[in-house]
Length: 395
Image (cartoon, rainbow, N blue to C red; front, top):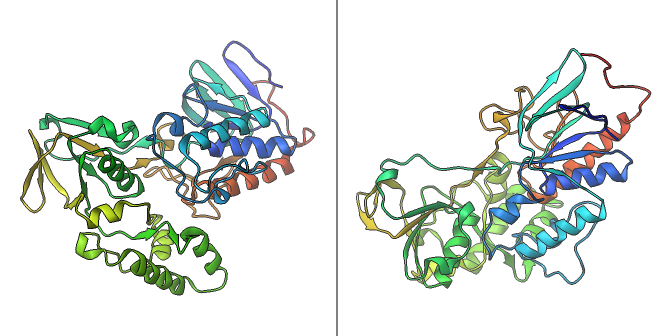
């Protein structure tokens, strides 16, 4: 399927960078349409973010029907919210079913379109891959974000990003500060609390926290259904009303809601509301303490922006991730050089020029990645005609 020389690899179909769910889904959809592809993965396994950079208690935040990849449902016996290991097992079975065999240990250093030949040149390790189509599937969350806080090196305790956090019993009896209040920060706090650590959570801005389910129905699923019939502002109002009924007021516990509703905020900024799985009850009971932003680190703890000092044994940075695309893709028209995201918002974030595609950058999770994968496969399949293009014979 490909021609080789010692340094160059000719790829007849699309070259996909990243063997996470987005890359696997794209490869499967292409194969279903008779189009071969090749995946390059810098780690030594598929779904490396799930296998190597997630905590043990993690479950899918949304019901499984919104997280299935194209062409293969979850096994019938899976729970509504599959565990981390169940999802990894599903991805491994998915790759096996569609005979997807990535090249592992291949870190892409540079990818650039060569206008003189009409192909992409992709440098990985000591090889150069030549392809007509390039699919960026490294995702929105490929590199941990570590904030620049004064005095970081002065703190003598343990500091780690949430990508390195595994389980709460590693911190039993410790006083732990979690910096960040998204879904990861909330769940890390709950895990710490459940394992007899003393958890503190930094909340710097406003946020929406919603129950994961409303009267036994998925909040996400209910939102999607209501959006088919009602305006977004009305749906937001209903969600906030139900949240108040189930959770009560949040502001008196240090969680101030934005004036913009949760769906509108997600649509305009990409900021996802927190889906509560029990953390807020621990905040209400003061088992998890909410604290303001950090002014600086000190030797044995931190100084907060309100001037108060607090000692901590460990600090966990649940400060999110960012795209690494600008570090290797030499293109700035489709992808932003600032944040590594496609410049065009969903649903137009999947296709650029010269055979460049993106999957997993929709800010809509696995459901958005599946939509991207199907669109890419359909678009490439329309072009998949050896009579209309060929490899260059010379350079």
